[in-house]
Every structure is written in C-alpha cells, then in structure tokens.
Length: 140
Image 1 (cartoon, rainbow, N blue to C red):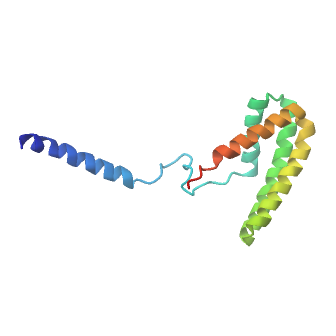
Image 2: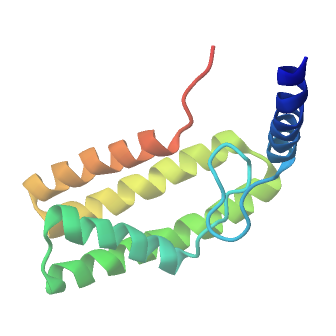
C-alpha cells in the first residue's frame, strides 16, 4: 500500500501532463504543419525566389542563367496566382487544374531552351519529387 501511495502523485502528474499536451494547438510562429489546413500562400515573387534558389543549388546554374530562369518563373508565377484567384472564387476546380497545367506547360516550353536538355530533365525530376513530398500520404 505504501508503494501505491508513493507512486500515485507521479502517475497523476503524468496523466495531467499528457492531457495538457494533447490539447495544445499548432506551434505559434513559424510555418504551419502539414495536414492542419493552414497553408499560407506565397507571393509570386516568393515562389519564384524559392524555386530558383533550389534550382541554383541542384542544377548548379550560373548567375546569368539564373536571372533568365527567375524572370520566366516569376512571369508564370504571377499569371498562375492571378488565374488561381479568379478560378477559386468561381469554385471551378477542374477549370483551375486545366489552366494551371496550361500555364506550367507554357513555362516549361520557355525554360527548356534556357536550361538545356540535361538540366531541364533534372529540373522536372526534382519538381516531381518536391510535389510528391508536399502531398500527404494516402490513408485507406
């Protein structure tokens, strides 16, 4: 009985700690965690910067090529952002998907001569990896 009396406060404190930590929301500040429905849209400039940053590292682009790539990516990021806003308000997801595919194809057509065949293939492979990593795993 003495043993139970000694460990009862420890058990009670542990249960309270678990209960409190389970009720906490997402962390304050910083990026929202995936799967919590709190994704923050980036501006077209932020999107272009982010994309060209990883391209500079992964594709080892020089500054002149990087500038050309940034200009193309920014142009299509702005176009994509504008179309997304219009089509989201209309609520037509199929039209939005078709338009985004059209914009991506136009961007790729313009990027391919700038990057060259080898770098363009690497770019598409890395882009596919990044998209797959952003998708939450499917649960059946």
